[in-house]
Structure formats: C-alpha cells, structure tokens
Image 1 (tube, helix red, strand yellow):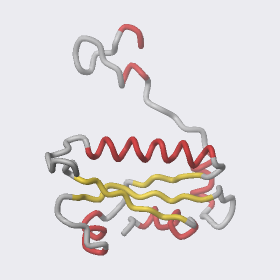
Image 2 (cartoon, helix red, strand yellow):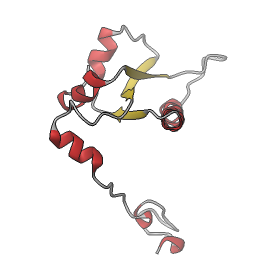
Image 3 (spheres, one colour):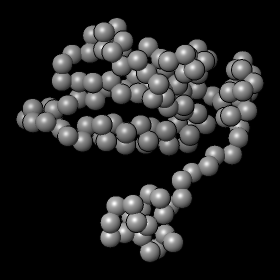
Image 4 (cartoon, one colour):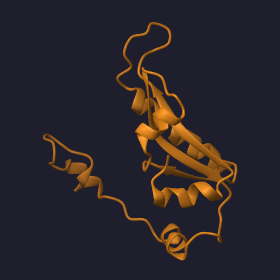
Length: 128
C-alpha cells in the first residue's frame, strides 16, 4: 500500500504501521474536525518516544489510501492517512542514494515564512 520509494523503508523495518483517523468522537458520535491533527500529534509523540528508546521512525505520506481502505477493510467513519517504519538505524541494505539523503543536513523554512503578523503572508516582527 506504499508508493515505490517508501517500499524500500518498509522492507527493512521490523515494525510497519498505517495510521487511521476516526472522524467522530466515541463518547457522543459528534464530528471530530481535528482528528487528523490529533493523529499527527500522536505520531509526533510516538516519534519522540521511539527516539528516546534508541529507535528510528521514518514517517511516510506516500501511501495509496484507497488501497489501504480496501485491503484492511477500513470502515466508513475512519480514514487512513500515513504510514511509519520503526526500527534501529540501518547503515546498509539501502540504496546509496537513500543512505546519503538520510545522512545529509536538513534545511527548514525560515521562521518568517511560517509565523505571520497582522496579515497572512506578512512575517511577524519578532521573526524578521
């Protein structure tokens, strides 16, 4: 159910998981408009926990969602979102290009491109 580039991560991982969000609250069946956000927070804390245990977690958005729904009989009211491979860091068995990319320094957007002031798209004065 993963796109081809992500299959390389999956085949080496002792743990592979798919994430699924529930669209309503269990206690009252009202819509949970933040279910995707909640799932993202859960994955973030899971990643921190994995790291604290000496594990690595490769999160993947390249998932064939319709195939996940069909293969795992995901019922109405739920929707799959992402996948993650969890295991110990590997230094072999992957294509060289993947190992180089994984070892390379990451670049992030500037804070001023993310946090805005009085209008959307205008950097906040504290980020200038």
